[in-house]
Image 1: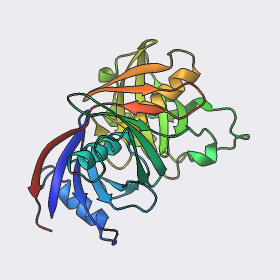
Image 2: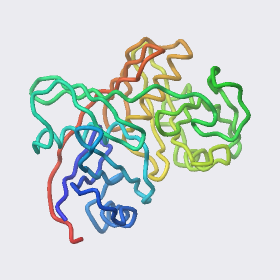
Image 3: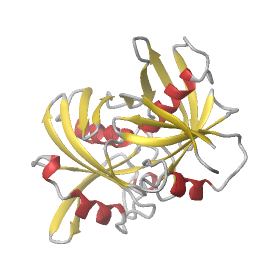
Length: 280
């Protein structure tokens, strides 16, 4: 099986091209993404033909579960598709079919393609995230929801970006936060029947945020595109950032734009690292 290793701000994936026939993707993911005995990666990206868009993307987490959305993975797929000629080069916009719906991608020009992904509108209703709490019609976002983890209370700001996110705004530096202990407990808290991605974020000023991410089904990753979008949305609602913000994660910087009404826009690096053959 031919593969390509790709990464976006350190969020790395094994990418393969495939037809639309179903395979045991969960088992393939667990084997090929093992960092000690195989290629290694945070997940598997599968690029397929699409009847709804220019290309189709499926993403599988390290544990084999399928994810609905992934901003870094989406940019990497677009970068790969452009360089491999799977889509028309030189076009200003293309579309990608995902489990969360068809996503539009805007392409800029330069030494490297500038890839801006339309990540959809955030959803705040409890059943959309989903969360097992009573809530009104969803017009009021779930903010600062207290959850006890061990001897520490975390206050979660919850949103769906096509996948569930819980953001905790902290005063200390994210590097000092005990994410390896708190992250798994929040991810699998009974509030979230489908688990949740957990982000800790420290607002530096109105244009800059530092953060770390614990991804469901993966663990800590160096970056998370949908997580960066979730952080920006909830920070915007708190009134502490402008419409454009840089999210600094351990693996690099992601740029997010949101005006409080439309789709969230995500930009950032997308690199092809190497290619190889894996024994299927």
